[in-house]
Image (tube, rainbow, N blue to C red; front, top):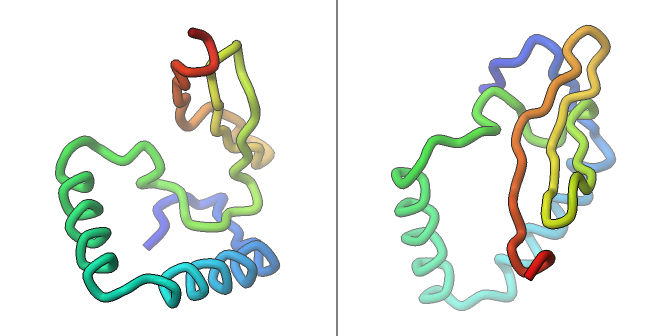
Length: 94
C-alpha cells in the first residue's frame, strides 16, 4: 500500500510494466524463478527501501542523471518536490 498522499498511478506505464514482467517471468525456468525470489528476499532484509513511501508507476516519480556517476530519483508533485534517492554508478566515473 502506498503511503504518499501525492501518489497517482500512470496506467500506461503500469500496463507496459506488467506486460514486460509477465514476458520476463514467462521466459524463466522454475529454478531461475526460485533463485530470483531467494535473492529478492535476501535483499529485502539487507537495507531499508528508499522507495517505501512511493507507489509503483507513480506519475510524479521521475529519474534523471545528476553529477557524473549519479542517477537521481525525485518526486515532481506540486508542493512535494524532493529527491527520493540517489544511486551512485561507479563504473561511469572510473
